[in-house]
Image (cartoon, rainbow, N blue to C red; front, side, top):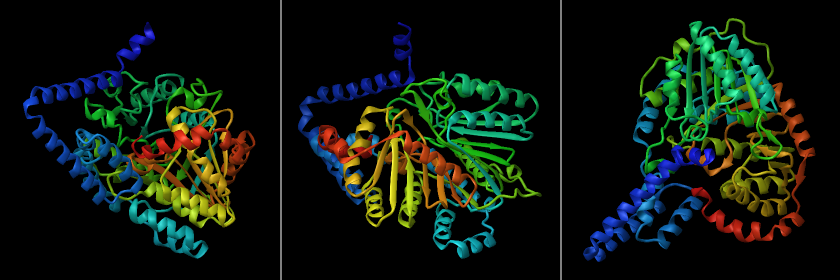
Length: 510
């Protein structure tokens, strides 16, 4: 009974019921005007036709266009209305205005030191090109003198994070897709409350949809009463709430502008394997950076804060000025991706790495539900002799997405791509490693939501110490994962060749 009441009173369930009621009311209104059915039907068909024209004219992926045109043609009376409501025709106006307002501040606070880029051009022109792309389109420079530590699991990440939070003297910024009350978050919250009493400024951003099942309603107000400045990003509201797009999928911690964290690890107990919702083990990854590259994360957080609050706060006081720069090898470039800028930065970074790979490219991703460009790039890399390996979960968190992921296996395996399923449980890491030299650790999945709809972030790494630890983790993960073969694909024929292609048609909408 308690579980039933918890489900019945959940915000998503209540919102869904409100949506159904509103749709029912809309249908009743149409029937009430039944005498004018022909006129109404013609008007709705014109809306659907207009939606198809708009879709064809938009500069989006052909798969996304097809995924919308099919249901509109199947349901001409309501297809156009569906597209207007759920097709990103109207992006949230406040978000867009806030992003445009704050983007002007990025260039003034994040300035590329030209000697770093010149040196990188001499050492590795391909890497310099990647870096220039991120500088031009994400607005984030590349830095040296930044130490890196890679964490192959959530537990050591969390323990080190708690130690670093205790050392905060000026401010703590946290931005996470999921917060969940429990051992992990409660321990962090205990430190934050103590730091607030010491005079440390603490700011927290969590995504309202990401945390809808794990936090009580109006949790931001609970935090404010504790002295923690808090934002519930893009709060759920009825009717439009079920779109679930334009979410803040980033995971960022900044401590005094000196130390930064990112990766796939959220603040909930499954990420430290205190609970086991999907299999025996939850595998994730994160990275800790210390040095000048943390400035990127500081500005990225403040931009998102100002977007949500619609303010023009000065970033300068929060940028730490290093007098003794850390002695560390390599280069670090934290970056962000936004659905509001028209540039697919997350996907483009991956495509650049796949295209430049000479020996190998290894990938961790929980979802492999991506567009034809990425699939083609992976197949071409394998065909030219690059060792391409992808690890996906062995236990699903979402059955439909799991089937979609598996439906992509056969064409990739046929091209020579090596695919593994993480046998112990669910793999949530988002990492790419290329040729022992470059890597990305971040929040970007190989799926449409990360590439097209979410706010994301990552750290692009070149010849840093953490790369060898990432490679060691990947090799150990291959050893405990199931290798996917053509025999495996044939045994799953219905799933991969019947259900999969049908689901794939609508995958951009999932």
